[in-house]
Amino acid sequence: MYNQLIRKQSLFRGLTVPQFTVLTGLLVIFLGTFALALPICSNTDVGLWESFFTATSAVTVTGLSIINVSQDLTLLGQIVLAFMLLIGGLGLMAITTFLQGFVVSGTELKTRLDRGRTLDEFGVGGVGRTFKGIALTAAVLILIGAFVLYIFGFNDIPNLGDRLWASIFHSISAYNNAGFGLWENSLESYRTNSVVNITIIILIFLGGLGWRVTSDLWTNRRNLHFRKLSLHTRLVLRTSFVLMIIGTIGLLITESIVQENFFAGLDFKQRFVSAFFKSVSARTAGFTNMPISIQTVSDSGLLLLMTLMFIGASPGGTGGGIKTTTVAALLAATRSTLRGQDDVVIRNRKISDKVVLKAVGITVGSLLFVLMMALLITMTGNFGTESSFSFLEMLFTCISAFATVGFDLGITEKLNHFGQLVLIIGMFVGRLGILLLLSAIWHALNKGRFYNQNRIGYPREDFYV
Image 1 (tube, helix red, strand yellow):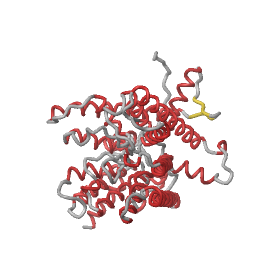
Image 2 (cartoon, helix red, strand yellow; image 1 turned 60 degrees about the horizontal axis):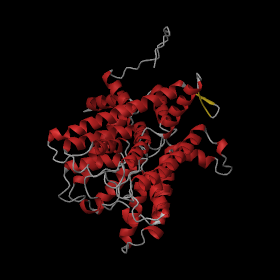
Image 3 (cartoon, helix red, strand yellow; image 1 turned 180 degrees about the horizontal axis):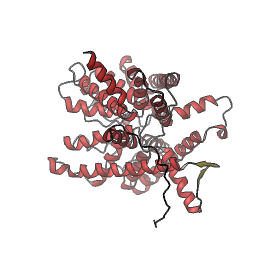
Image 4 (cartoon, one colour; image 1 turned 120 degrees about the vertical axis):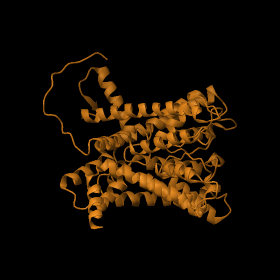
């Protein structure tokens, strides 16, 4: 017995941070699967497969669902779902690394420094007091959002208990950029309710900024000046606002000129609020205040939404995607190339080649993975799928799953188990990050051996691109 404990402890010590994160994420998903499948959490229509898909979507804060949350889950099941949203949204990587300090005792200094560096790369900056700050900030914002929704938003719900739970659940889901709702039509019943729309937008935006940004803003709150903020904060804020403006104006143009179905029956104010809501929600939140389908949204509008989904939120936030700073780094590198500069410079600051290479790696890896998902989804017809979908619908759903958005054109529930399994893998990979997963696989294949930078210089030779 003692020897078995020693072997298990040695196994945990041998895990790298990426490997530990992947295993812990799978463990949380499996525990959530069995919890949702219990009769006290769901009805007989929810089996292990439905529970597995829902648990994965919850832990990865995606929002894609093949069940009706309000009808298929009991109150306890909905509470379990909300708890999984908190685990995934507050940062699966931050939580697992925080827990690793308790599981792995006696680790060497190098491992501890590696763990701290990994946390810092995800925008958390450390454990202990910082993690408490993350949890406290999330709790305060979620409670404020729930209070506003209860008093001013969902006041059409007559039962006070149902109104309170709806306010808390949607506040948790919005802050964690999850997109899960208690109603089958999401928030479409509140499309003209400005309080609900604005509250959800603010929660989505704050949750997607990341702890590093919110901490920087809080530190400089008494003398807040844009130039005093860190370069990371300024890039995140600037890129986020630009994407919101582009998305809002783009949807107003495409859905008012190209196709009228999306904004049918709405005045200009309601159209603007709906477009703004959809622009913010597209960046990994997944809430809808207007129905989304291949019939209601134009192809150009769907392409715009796919672009916003693929970019996603910011590092260290509760959302997915390749992140706003990745896009900023790529655009800066493109500008430097056009200017004939050897260095990438942003706001009079030289950006290291390592950051640019990482941005390229994330983008290329994510694109290839999404294309692979789409390729596999197109093969579902050979595995018993009776429904036929257009390639645009399949590509849209793949990006939605990988970027942990949760927008659905109505094909997720119609896919067979093979197609849904592709989406499950896409949600998991998208939430963890393509580079983190590849790092875990690389170290597993090489049995944990680390390869240092080669000190040998090589002759330089260029090629044409």
